Length: 78
Length: 252
Image (cartoon, rainbow over all chains, first blue to last red; front, top):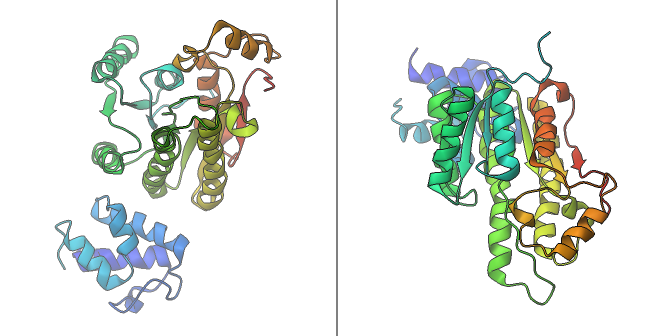
C-alpha cells in the first residue's frame, strides 16, 4: 500500500471518516477530530508506519497536511 | 488452575527498580511471567547486578535503563527503545522516588525542585509515554506509587507530602482520561515500609512510627509489590482511579 493510502487509512479508521473525505484541508476540530480522537489517531498512524512520534510532533499534528510533513521527518515520503 | 495473577506475555516497565519496593516488584512480576524492564539512577553497577540476579533466579534477560525519570529527553529515549524492541507496553509502575525531610522554614529550593522532578514530574513523563504505547493495544495498567503522607501529611514532609499528594491527583485525572482506551490508572499509598528511606530515622522516631501501625509491624517491600501485582493483573481489570493504602492500619 502506498504511504498516502496508509495515512488515509489511519485517519479514516481512527476518526471514522470515509477515505474520500480526507484531504489536506482536514484539520483538528473538524468532524470527529477532537482531543480524544487525536490520541487514537496518533496510535493509528504510529502503528501503520511502525514508528513512535516525538511528543512535540504529536502536539503539532494538527492537520492531514501537517501529518504528511511530520512523517517526512521519519523518512516517510508522500 | 492458571493463576489469576499470571503476567505471562506482558511487558512491564518499573521505574526505580534496583532497590526497595521497585526491586521487590521486579522480582515478583518476573516470577509471575512478565518481561520486566528495569530502571535505576544511582548506580550502573547495581542496575547490572539486578539484571544478573533476575537472570540467575528466573533465567531471563531483563533490559535495564539507567536514567533520571525527571529527564524528559532520557525518558523519551527509553520509550523509543521499548517501542523498537517490544512494540508494546502492558504495565508501568511509577515507583522511582526521593525523600528529604525538612521542617517549614528550613526547606531549600533545590530540595523542592529535585523532589518534585522525581516524584511528580517523572510520573507524568512516564505516564504520558506509556499511555501512548498502551493505546495501540487498547489495554494497559499504570500503577503510581504515592504515599500515606500524600493522603494525611506528616511533620517535616511538606515537600515530600506535596509531591506524593500530586501523584494522587495525577492518578485520578489520568484514570478518567484513559479509561475509554481501557488503560487503568491506580495508585498505591504505602505507609512505613522497610526501605532505604527509613535508614536516617533515629530509634525514637522509628519506634513512634511503629507504634502508629495497628498491625504492629513495619511493612516490607514485598507487601507493596503484592498490591502492585494485583493492579497489574486481570484481577483488577474493572478497577481504575483508586488509591490503595498498604500501611498495616497506620494512623499518622
